[in-house]
Amino acid sequence: MKLFKFIITAVLVLMAFAVNAADNDTTRRKLKAAAIISLNSNGIASIPAFSLDKPALIATLSLTKNRFSYEPVLGYGLEMKPWFIDNWVNYKIINKTRFELRAGINFSTFFTPVRISDTAVLKAERYFAYTITGIYKFTPATFLTLA
Image (cartoon, rainbow, N blue to C red; front, side, top):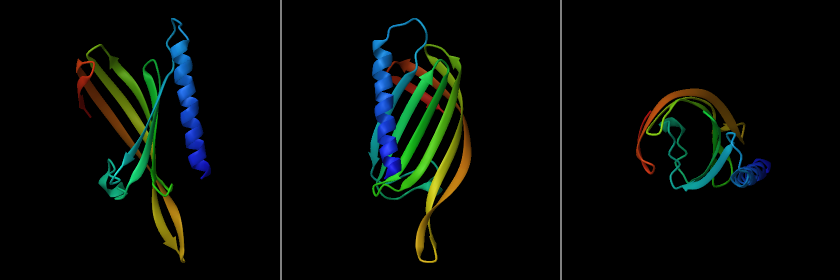
């Protein structure tokens, strides 16, 4: 429950940063913040072995400044037990109007329920993922992504 309160507080702080950044008009590059909270009906994960197979709550945060971005993704089951935590750090190698090329690394933790002598505990497993992503923008709202 403490972690849930921390997540809600972090989302509210990020929203305050986003509002402050929008009000402050300067010529230097600003820190951009965004947050998305979604409800997933089946707990599908990007790696099939890590799927939850039941409804889940997923919070995606984004902090971007210049070419760097930090995008943590937090996944929880509806009973508020952690499912996964992704920590994406991205760098825009090419940043043109119609084309973007990004390189990123993900420091991730996946939680699995395990029984130890009639006691249920969560086992944390860590893994790393790397990506190079190309994004071609046909229009501001239409784009093609290759990862």
